[in-house]
Image 1 (cartoon, rainbow, N blue to C red):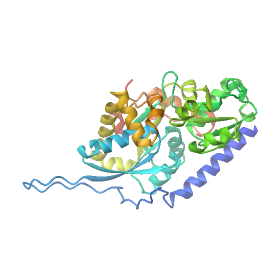
Image 2 (cartoon, one colour; image 1 turned 180 degrees about the vertical axis):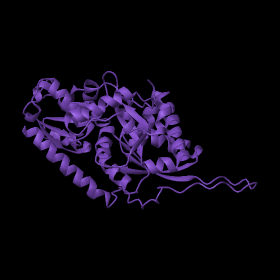
Image 3 (spheres, rainbow, N blue to C red; image 1 turned 90 degrees about the horizontal axis):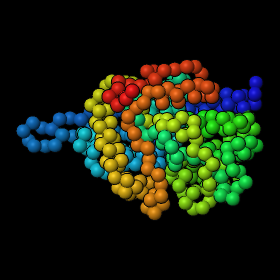
Image 4 (cartoon, rainbow, N blue to C red; image 1 turned 45 degrees about the horizontal axis):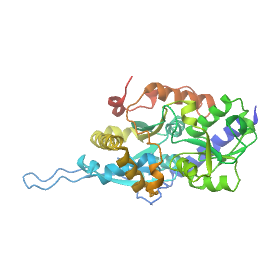
Length: 350
Protein backbone atom coordinates (compact mmCIF):
# COMPACT_ATOMS: atom_id res chain seq x y z
CA UNK A 1 0.00 0.00 0.00
CA UNK A 2 1.35 3.41 -0.90
CA UNK A 3 2.51 5.65 1.96
CA UNK A 4 0.03 8.37 0.92
CA UNK A 5 -2.92 5.99 1.00
CA UNK A 6 -1.91 4.62 4.43
CA UNK A 7 -1.48 8.12 5.82
CA UNK A 8 -4.79 9.16 4.31
CA UNK A 9 -6.66 6.23 5.93
CA UNK A 10 -5.01 6.89 9.29
CA UNK A 11 -5.91 10.57 9.02
CA UNK A 12 -9.53 9.72 8.27
CA UNK A 13 -9.76 7.47 11.37
CA UNK A 14 -8.25 10.16 13.59
CA UNK A 15 -10.54 12.84 12.14
CA UNK A 16 -13.60 10.65 12.72
CA UNK A 17 -12.64 9.97 16.35
CA UNK A 18 -12.17 13.69 16.94
CA UNK A 19 -15.55 14.50 15.41
CA UNK A 20 -17.35 11.82 17.41
CA UNK A 21 -15.65 13.02 20.58
CA UNK A 22 -16.63 16.62 19.82
CA UNK A 23 -20.27 15.62 19.44
CA UNK A 24 -20.52 14.97 23.17
CA UNK A 25 -19.51 18.50 24.09
CA UNK A 26 -20.85 20.90 21.48
CA UNK A 27 -17.99 23.28 20.69
CA UNK A 28 -19.85 26.44 19.75
CA UNK A 29 -17.37 29.30 19.89
CA UNK A 30 -19.71 31.55 21.80
CA UNK A 31 -20.75 28.76 24.19
CA UNK A 32 -24.28 28.69 22.88
CA UNK A 33 -26.68 26.86 25.18
CA UNK A 34 -28.13 23.55 24.05
CA UNK A 35 -31.15 23.83 21.83
CA UNK A 36 -34.41 21.97 22.43
CA UNK A 37 -35.24 18.69 20.67
CA UNK A 38 -36.24 20.62 17.57
CA UNK A 39 -33.41 23.12 18.10
CA UNK A 40 -35.67 26.17 18.19
CA UNK A 41 -38.67 27.80 19.81
CA UNK A 42 -41.82 27.80 17.74
CA UNK A 43 -43.25 31.25 16.99
CA UNK A 44 -46.53 32.09 18.63
CA UNK A 45 -49.14 34.05 16.75
CA UNK A 46 -49.82 37.64 17.73
CA UNK A 47 -52.81 38.27 19.97
CA UNK A 48 -55.89 38.50 17.82
CA UNK A 49 -57.32 41.99 17.29
CA UNK A 50 -54.74 43.59 19.59
CA UNK A 51 -52.36 44.70 16.88
CA UNK A 52 -49.44 43.02 18.73
CA UNK A 53 -46.72 41.76 16.39
CA UNK A 54 -46.15 38.03 16.04
CA UNK A 55 -43.25 36.67 18.06
CA UNK A 56 -40.18 35.84 15.97
CA UNK A 57 -38.90 32.27 15.89
CA UNK A 58 -35.43 31.92 17.37
CA UNK A 59 -32.93 30.12 15.12
CA UNK A 60 -29.26 29.37 15.75
CA UNK A 61 -27.16 29.33 12.58
CA UNK A 62 -23.56 28.10 12.45
CA UNK A 63 -21.30 30.35 10.35
CA UNK A 64 -17.63 30.84 9.44
CA UNK A 65 -15.95 34.26 9.32
CA UNK A 66 -15.34 34.17 5.58
CA UNK A 67 -16.42 36.51 2.81
CA UNK A 68 -18.79 33.90 1.38
CA UNK A 69 -21.06 34.17 4.45
CA UNK A 70 -21.64 37.89 4.13
CA UNK A 71 -25.09 37.00 2.82
CA UNK A 72 -26.14 35.80 6.29
CA UNK A 73 -24.90 39.03 7.84
CA UNK A 74 -26.79 41.01 5.19
CA UNK A 75 -30.01 39.07 5.72
CA UNK A 76 -29.81 39.82 9.43
CA UNK A 77 -28.76 43.47 9.18
CA UNK A 78 -31.25 44.30 6.42
CA UNK A 79 -34.18 42.71 8.27
CA UNK A 80 -34.71 39.92 5.74
CA UNK A 81 -34.79 37.22 8.42
CA UNK A 82 -37.17 39.29 10.54
CA UNK A 83 -39.47 39.80 7.55
CA UNK A 84 -39.66 36.02 7.27
CA UNK A 85 -40.48 35.58 10.96
CA UNK A 86 -37.00 34.63 12.20
CA UNK A 87 -34.78 35.89 15.00
CA UNK A 88 -31.41 34.52 13.85
CA UNK A 89 -28.40 34.14 16.12
CA UNK A 90 -25.14 33.68 14.20
CA UNK A 91 -22.79 31.25 15.99
CA UNK A 92 -19.24 31.41 14.65
CA UNK A 93 -17.03 28.34 14.15
CA UNK A 94 -13.46 27.87 12.97
CA UNK A 95 -14.25 25.09 10.48
CA UNK A 96 -17.07 23.18 8.84
CA UNK A 97 -16.08 20.11 10.88
CA UNK A 98 -16.58 22.02 14.14
CA UNK A 99 -19.96 23.22 12.90
CA UNK A 100 -21.06 19.68 12.00
CA UNK A 101 -20.16 18.43 15.48
CA UNK A 102 -22.00 21.26 17.24
CA UNK A 103 -25.05 20.84 15.02
CA UNK A 104 -25.28 17.14 15.82
CA UNK A 105 -25.17 17.84 19.55
CA UNK A 106 -27.93 20.45 19.27
CA UNK A 107 -25.96 23.66 19.82
CA UNK A 108 -27.07 25.08 16.47
CA UNK A 109 -29.99 24.34 14.16
CA UNK A 110 -28.59 24.99 10.68
CA UNK A 111 -24.94 24.97 9.59
CA UNK A 112 -22.83 26.00 6.64
CA UNK A 113 -20.32 23.42 5.45
CA UNK A 114 -18.32 22.72 2.34
CA UNK A 115 -20.26 19.76 0.87
CA UNK A 116 -17.38 17.26 0.93
CA UNK A 117 -16.95 17.65 4.70
CA UNK A 118 -20.64 17.02 5.26
CA UNK A 119 -20.67 14.06 2.84
CA UNK A 120 -17.99 12.21 4.79
CA UNK A 121 -19.83 12.89 8.06
CA UNK A 122 -23.11 11.62 6.58
CA UNK A 123 -21.42 8.45 5.35
CA UNK A 124 -20.23 7.83 8.91
CA UNK A 125 -23.75 8.07 10.31
CA UNK A 126 -24.35 11.78 10.90
CA UNK A 127 -27.85 13.07 10.16
CA UNK A 128 -27.49 15.94 7.67
CA UNK A 129 -29.48 17.02 4.61
CA UNK A 130 -28.81 19.86 2.17
CA UNK A 131 -31.44 22.58 2.35
CA UNK A 132 -29.79 25.39 0.36
CA UNK A 133 -26.73 26.06 -1.77
CA UNK A 134 -24.66 29.08 -0.74
CA UNK A 135 -21.66 29.38 -3.05
CA UNK A 136 -20.05 27.81 -6.10
CA UNK A 137 -16.63 28.07 -7.69
CA UNK A 138 -16.29 30.30 -10.72
CA UNK A 139 -16.25 28.95 -14.28
CA UNK A 140 -12.97 30.75 -14.92
CA UNK A 141 -10.32 32.58 -12.90
CA UNK A 142 -9.93 34.52 -10.74
CA UNK A 143 -11.68 32.59 -7.99
CA UNK A 144 -11.82 32.64 -4.21
CA UNK A 145 -9.70 29.52 -3.80
CA UNK A 146 -6.03 29.55 -4.81
CA UNK A 147 -2.66 27.84 -4.44
CA UNK A 148 -0.03 30.49 -3.80
CA UNK A 149 3.73 30.67 -3.36
CA UNK A 150 5.98 33.58 -2.39
CA UNK A 151 6.22 36.15 -5.15
CA UNK A 152 9.93 35.47 -5.67
CA UNK A 153 9.65 31.67 -5.26
CA UNK A 154 11.33 29.49 -7.90
CA UNK A 155 8.11 27.46 -8.03
CA UNK A 156 6.40 28.42 -11.28
CA UNK A 157 3.58 25.87 -11.58
CA UNK A 158 1.86 22.99 -9.84
CA UNK A 159 4.27 20.48 -11.36
CA UNK A 160 7.05 22.12 -9.30
CA UNK A 161 5.36 21.14 -6.03
CA UNK A 162 6.96 17.68 -5.86
CA UNK A 163 8.89 17.39 -2.59
CA UNK A 164 7.35 20.63 -1.24
CA UNK A 165 5.39 21.50 1.92
CA UNK A 166 1.89 22.92 1.43
CA UNK A 167 -0.27 24.54 4.11
CA UNK A 168 -4.00 23.78 3.92
CA UNK A 169 -6.80 24.47 6.37
CA UNK A 170 -8.16 20.89 6.54
CA UNK A 171 -6.35 17.76 5.37
CA UNK A 172 -9.39 15.70 4.38
CA UNK A 173 -11.70 18.38 3.05
CA UNK A 174 -13.21 18.81 -0.41
CA UNK A 175 -10.72 21.63 -0.89
CA UNK A 176 -7.81 19.29 -0.16
CA UNK A 177 -9.15 16.67 -2.55
CA UNK A 178 -9.52 19.28 -5.30
CA UNK A 179 -5.90 20.31 -4.79
CA UNK A 180 -4.73 16.69 -4.88
CA UNK A 181 -6.60 16.15 -8.13
CA UNK A 182 -4.93 19.18 -9.73
CA UNK A 183 -1.48 18.13 -8.52
CA UNK A 184 -1.89 14.58 -9.81
CA UNK A 185 -3.16 15.90 -13.15
CA UNK A 186 0.14 17.79 -13.44
CA UNK A 187 2.01 14.49 -13.21
CA UNK A 188 3.20 14.89 -9.61
CA UNK A 189 3.28 11.86 -7.30
CA UNK A 190 0.98 12.99 -4.49
CA UNK A 191 2.95 10.91 -1.97
CA UNK A 192 5.90 13.24 -2.63
CA UNK A 193 3.95 16.29 -1.40
CA UNK A 194 3.65 17.08 2.31
CA UNK A 195 0.40 18.73 3.40
CA UNK A 196 0.45 20.59 6.72
CA UNK A 197 -2.85 21.51 8.38
CA UNK A 198 -2.74 25.25 9.05
CA UNK A 199 -5.64 27.61 9.84
CA UNK A 200 -6.27 30.08 7.03
CA UNK A 201 -5.41 33.18 9.11
CA UNK A 202 -1.98 31.69 9.92
CA UNK A 203 -1.04 30.64 6.40
CA UNK A 204 0.47 33.95 5.28
CA UNK A 205 2.90 33.96 8.22
CA UNK A 206 3.85 30.33 7.52
CA UNK A 207 4.54 31.22 3.89
CA UNK A 208 6.52 34.40 4.66
CA UNK A 209 8.67 32.60 7.23
CA UNK A 210 9.23 29.80 4.70
CA UNK A 211 7.87 27.12 7.02
CA UNK A 212 5.93 26.01 3.94
CA UNK A 213 6.55 26.37 0.23
CA UNK A 214 2.93 27.03 -0.76
CA UNK A 215 -0.49 27.65 0.74
CA UNK A 216 -4.00 26.63 -0.27
CA UNK A 217 -6.32 29.44 0.75
CA UNK A 218 -9.61 31.24 0.08
CA UNK A 219 -10.77 34.83 0.14
CA UNK A 220 -10.22 37.14 1.87
CA UNK A 221 -6.77 35.55 2.26
CA UNK A 222 -6.32 34.93 -1.48
CA UNK A 223 -6.67 38.65 -2.16
CA UNK A 224 -4.66 39.68 0.92
CA UNK A 225 -1.65 37.69 -0.25
CA UNK A 226 -1.69 38.97 -3.82
CA UNK A 227 -2.54 42.59 -2.97
CA UNK A 228 0.23 42.80 -0.37
CA UNK A 229 2.80 41.61 -2.90
CA UNK A 230 3.63 38.58 -0.76
CA UNK A 231 1.94 35.83 -2.76
CA UNK A 232 1.67 34.69 -6.35
CA UNK A 233 -1.08 32.39 -7.63
CA UNK A 234 0.05 29.22 -9.40
CA UNK A 235 -3.34 27.49 -9.51
CA UNK A 236 -7.07 28.03 -9.07
CA UNK A 237 -7.76 24.46 -7.83
CA UNK A 238 -11.54 24.58 -7.54
CA UNK A 239 -11.88 25.74 -11.13
CA UNK A 240 -9.20 23.37 -12.44
CA UNK A 241 -10.67 20.31 -10.70
CA UNK A 242 -14.44 20.87 -11.12
CA UNK A 243 -15.47 24.29 -12.49
CA UNK A 244 -18.54 25.74 -10.72
CA UNK A 245 -18.44 23.04 -8.06
CA UNK A 246 -20.50 23.74 -4.92
CA UNK A 247 -18.24 25.23 -2.25
CA UNK A 248 -20.71 25.95 0.51
CA UNK A 249 -24.18 24.72 1.43
CA UNK A 250 -26.59 24.79 4.34
CA UNK A 251 -27.43 21.58 6.18
CA UNK A 252 -29.96 20.60 8.85
CA UNK A 253 -31.06 17.41 10.55
CA UNK A 254 -33.84 15.42 8.85
CA UNK A 255 -36.15 15.73 11.85
CA UNK A 256 -35.59 19.47 12.11
CA UNK A 257 -36.46 19.87 8.42
CA UNK A 258 -39.61 17.73 8.76
CA UNK A 259 -40.78 19.38 11.98
CA UNK A 260 -40.06 22.97 10.90
CA UNK A 261 -40.95 23.48 7.22
CA UNK A 262 -41.90 27.13 7.76
CA UNK A 263 -38.55 27.86 9.42
CA UNK A 264 -36.65 26.22 6.57
CA UNK A 265 -38.67 28.19 4.01
CA UNK A 266 -38.17 31.45 5.90
CA UNK A 267 -34.43 30.83 6.16
CA UNK A 268 -33.90 29.92 2.51
CA UNK A 269 -36.14 32.75 1.26
CA UNK A 270 -34.15 35.22 3.38
CA UNK A 271 -30.82 34.02 2.00
CA UNK A 272 -32.12 34.04 -1.56
CA UNK A 273 -33.21 37.65 -1.11
CA UNK A 274 -29.83 38.58 0.39
CA UNK A 275 -27.93 36.91 -2.45
CA UNK A 276 -30.02 38.69 -5.07
CA UNK A 277 -29.40 41.95 -3.19
CA UNK A 278 -25.62 41.39 -3.16
CA UNK A 279 -25.33 40.05 -6.69
CA UNK A 280 -27.35 43.00 -7.98
CA UNK A 281 -24.74 45.60 -7.02
CA UNK A 282 -21.02 44.71 -6.82
CA UNK A 283 -20.07 47.92 -5.00
CA UNK A 284 -22.75 47.36 -2.39
CA UNK A 285 -21.72 43.69 -2.05
CA UNK A 286 -18.11 44.60 -1.36
CA UNK A 287 -19.18 47.16 1.23
CA UNK A 288 -21.14 44.42 2.97
CA UNK A 289 -18.15 42.03 2.80
CA UNK A 290 -15.94 44.67 4.44
CA UNK A 291 -18.53 45.27 7.16
CA UNK A 292 -18.92 41.55 7.95
CA UNK A 293 -15.28 40.48 7.78
CA UNK A 294 -13.77 43.67 9.19
CA UNK A 295 -11.40 43.90 6.23
CA UNK A 296 -10.08 47.16 4.85
CA UNK A 297 -12.56 48.29 2.16
CA UNK A 298 -9.58 49.12 -0.08
CA UNK A 299 -8.55 45.45 0.03
CA UNK A 300 -12.07 44.19 -0.58
CA UNK A 301 -12.30 46.49 -3.60
CA UNK A 302 -9.76 44.26 -5.39
CA UNK A 303 -11.45 41.01 -4.35
CA UNK A 304 -13.34 39.03 -7.02
CA UNK A 305 -17.07 38.79 -6.40
CA UNK A 306 -18.07 35.82 -4.26
CA UNK A 307 -19.85 33.13 -6.26
CA UNK A 308 -23.16 33.34 -4.38
CA UNK A 309 -25.42 30.96 -6.25
CA UNK A 310 -28.58 29.22 -5.04
CA UNK A 311 -29.26 27.47 -8.37
CA UNK A 312 -28.30 23.83 -7.91
CA UNK A 313 -26.74 21.83 -10.74
CA UNK A 314 -27.00 18.16 -9.65
CA UNK A 315 -24.27 17.16 -12.11
CA UNK A 316 -21.74 19.38 -10.33
CA UNK A 317 -22.72 17.93 -6.96
CA UNK A 318 -22.40 14.40 -8.32
CA UNK A 319 -18.94 15.24 -9.67
CA UNK A 320 -17.87 16.32 -6.17
CA UNK A 321 -19.24 13.10 -4.68
CA UNK A 322 -17.37 11.04 -7.27
CA UNK A 323 -14.16 13.00 -6.64
CA UNK A 324 -14.43 12.36 -2.89
CA UNK A 325 -14.95 8.64 -3.52
CA UNK A 326 -12.06 8.45 -5.98
CA UNK A 327 -9.74 10.09 -3.45
CA UNK A 328 -10.67 7.58 -0.75
CA UNK A 329 -12.21 10.17 1.56
CA UNK A 330 -15.60 8.51 1.00
CA UNK A 331 -15.85 4.74 1.10
CA UNK A 332 -18.50 3.97 -1.49
CA UNK A 333 -20.44 5.46 -4.39
CA UNK A 334 -23.44 7.70 -3.65
CA UNK A 335 -26.01 9.74 -5.55
CA UNK A 336 -27.19 13.26 -4.83
CA UNK A 337 -30.66 11.98 -3.81
CA UNK A 338 -29.08 10.60 -0.65
CA UNK A 339 -28.00 14.06 0.47
CA UNK A 340 -30.65 16.45 -0.91
CA UNK A 341 -33.73 17.40 1.13
CA UNK A 342 -37.12 18.17 -0.38
CA UNK A 343 -36.53 21.80 0.59
CA UNK A 344 -33.79 22.00 -2.04
CA UNK A 345 -35.96 20.82 -4.96
CA UNK A 346 -37.29 24.25 -5.90
CA UNK A 347 -33.72 25.46 -6.45
CA UNK A 348 -32.59 22.61 -8.71
CA UNK A 349 -31.95 23.43 -12.37
CA UNK A 350 -31.16 20.78 -14.97
